[in-house]
Length: 120
Image 1 (tube, rainbow, N blue to C red):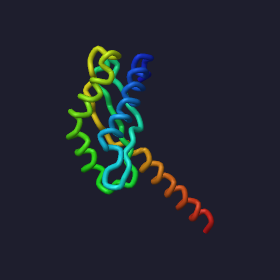
Image 2 (image 1 turned 135 degrees about the horizontal axis):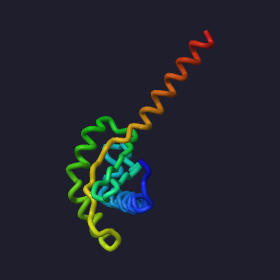
Image 3 (image 1 turned 180 degrees about the horizontal axis):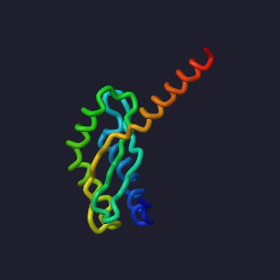
Image 4 (image 1 turned 135 degrees about the vertical axis):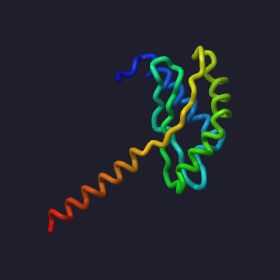
């Protein structure tokens, strides 16, 4: 489904502000690993926001995701105060693990194995 102009605008505002909030709350660096917001997707009715988080050098990503979900209320409160003049209502924040980097690594390993087999 194609994202509308308003969806893209709201997603960009939320992504920018969420990055700042994660820095301020100390959520961008956990257990020696790094967390970044890879994308923000908004539903057409602007009531739900899907925030995809990318984890780098974090051992237990599910545990870290749960920790962030526990702080979701605090994140939403901070976000609401920052964007209250730009949005009529604050979307519901849903956090997900962005596994595209894992997928890319897996594909690269498969291509390396194929090249090794071709050389033999």
